[in-house]
Structure formats: C-alpha cells, structure tokens
Length: 430
Ligand code: AMO
Image 1 (tube, rainbow, N blue to C red):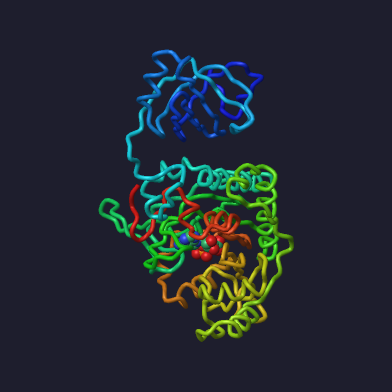
Image 2 (image 1 turned 90 degrees about the vertical axis):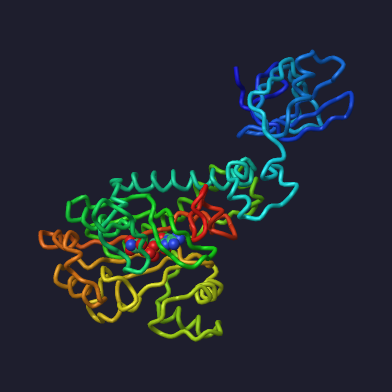
C-alpha cells in the first residue's frame, strides 16, 4: 500500500512509495536516487551486487522526473534526508520522462519566468513554487471560512455580460451569437442587485477580466477578485471587515503553512496589526508630491510611483479615504456635507493597492445623475437601475485582488508568480 514519503520512517520497516525521480547518482557499486512526492523526499539506495535482475534493469532505464513505484526495506541512516533510506526489492518505472526536459526541476539551471510559465507543470514540481500555491489555497480557504462565519451568502454571477461596470475602456468583447457581449470586469452590478434581493451579505470569489494594454508586474488580464457587499452598512463598517479578514488570513497562513513558508525561506512572517491607519486622499497626494519627481496633483489617480512613495512612508497596510468623487466610479456615494468627495476607499499594501470599495449610491435618481455625469448612458444600465426603484437598502462593499494579496504576502516580484496559468498581453497558452 502506498505510503506518503514524509511518513516513511525506519520504524515502518518496509514501505511502498510512488513518486518522481528527483536526482540520480551512480557511484559504480552503489546507485542513489532521490524520490520526491508532494510530501517530501527520500533516498533510495541500490547496492548493485545484492540487487535483483529487474531492479538492475529498471535503474539502468530510468531517467530523472520519471514516475516510479518502489517498495523495499527502510533503514536508518544519518546522512540521508529525513535520516532514512529505502533499499528496493521492487523498482518499477510507471511513466518514463523524456530528456532533456524543457525545464530543470531541481533548479541547478535558473530559468526566466517566461520559460517557467511555458512549462508550468514542471515548474510547479519545485517545492518553492508548489509552496506559493499551497499558501494561495490556504488564503482562499480562510477567506471562505471567515466570510461564511460572518453570515455571508456565497453567490456566482455571470462572466458573460452586456455592459461595462468599471468604465468602458478595459473590456474584452466576445462573440455571443448575434449579440454584443463582453467578459465581465467585476461582479459589482450583480452583487449590488443582490442587496435589492434582500440577501444582506454576499460574497463571490471569481475571475474578473480587464483588457489592460500595458504589461506590468502587478496587472493581469484575468485576475481573481474577492468581492463582498453588505446591506445597511457604510464604508467604515466594510473597511473594518476587510482589515479583520486580511489580518485573520495572515494568521491562518502563519499557523497552517509553516512548511510552505520554510520552502519559500520566509522566516519573519509578519501579521499586520489592526486597525490599519487611515490616510485621506489629500494627505496621500501631499506625501507623493514631496517624494516623487513626476508632477502629481489633487484630482489625479495614484500612479505606481506615488503608491510606492506613500507606501514607503506608511510602512504597513493602510487605507486611503475621502477620494474626489470625480475619479471614483459612479456607484460611490458622495458625502452629504461635501459632494466633491465620496465614501470610497482603497486598501493598500506598502507596495500597491490591494482593494477598492465604497458605500454605494442607493438612491435611483442620484445614481442616474452620476452615471450621466461620467458620460455613460443610463439606458444601457436599465437592468441594474430597475432594482433601485423597488426598495434598495443602503449598502457598501469592496473587491480585493487575490493574486495581489498572495504576491505581497509572500514578497513575490511578479504577480504572474501567484497564478498557475497567467493571462497577460502575450500569454494565452498554456
Ligand atoms: P477595482 O477595479 O479597484 O475595483 O478592483 C479591485 C481589486 O482587484 C484587483 N485587480 C487586479 N489585479 C490584478 N490585475 C488586474 N488587472 C486587476 N484589476 C483589479 C486589485 C484591485 O484593488 N468593483 C470594484 C470593487 C468594489 O468597489 O467593490 C472594483 O472592481 O487588487
């Protein structure tokens, strides 16, 4: 019966393992193999004089990264990984790997990210790459657990849609019978409609599509958004929820992903403190003006240089609040005392923006006015506007980029490292 490699100890006496041939070393009379599965690595030692004919044939034919089944006797040995080795009675090649391979799994030859992504199935055999996706999985697990335990209902909204949500420029048009259709940029309009349906607290973790022309280290054309919407809440309430969720997710990773963190050589994994400091937009611009050379003024969006400069000053996760109404989407609620600023916020990591959110406009006529003010046609939003005429509660919410959370949590240099099969300007396969 198959034993996961990490569970093989001298006490098990005998063991049957399945795995990949990680390394091969032939010293004449003795042949050594390192065999790897997702749980660990074990040394297999073949004393050629004592080995059976079939074992000798198999070890001659086997190549690195082949899949093998090996069973035999476990012995304690100090110098081998995990302090034990396996001496095989059976050595079966289940699936032979061709060589040379497109990518060196043991990382003796460092590879460019593009080469790694072209052979992602081999790249992901590397423990440090597998560790990123183990942690990403733990993040998604914790976010689900956190939101379910706070009374949220999970929803699934359409990805093929007829209208833009976040402004018209970043849409992917698709062929949908005889109609004009697009890949959705955000579940925004649908999660708001579910507030009219009386669901009160909804979330979705799913793909968003942005036709960003530029290739950067923090943008993808298909990203994963963690979207939340809450009725009878203002922006402050959903900001509190967001910072608690981020802190609890870090805590979960710290508690449950020690091996993966060790594989990534992350020793000082810092959990952010709550509450996150809150900076208003005008203060953020003033910091950027002091620190960056490019001109930036009140009313400009924050470019990457500004984000980094402000992040450096803050040195921790933080919020930017009180944004000019003009540069936030039509669905952000203007302040009653000064409609030139609105109840929108961004949640930032020192390196970049992780989330945007707002208290929403829930009054039909104001929403129509704001859609028109952005130069959009309210008629193309009728399906979205109708629910606002039949009892829409006040509500607030946010969208949090899952890849950016993983990227900043693990200090990855490129967002593509946080996605198994990234989609960018030049990458449509694998
Ligand atoms: P926004 O457009 O700011 O807001 O997106 C929310 C978060 O999603 C992530 N994100 C991306 N990540 C990688 N590549 C991209 N191209 C990309 N675009 C967005 C970011 C970003 O902060 N409807 C609003 C949310 C809301 O108000 O509820 C929205 O989509 O981390």
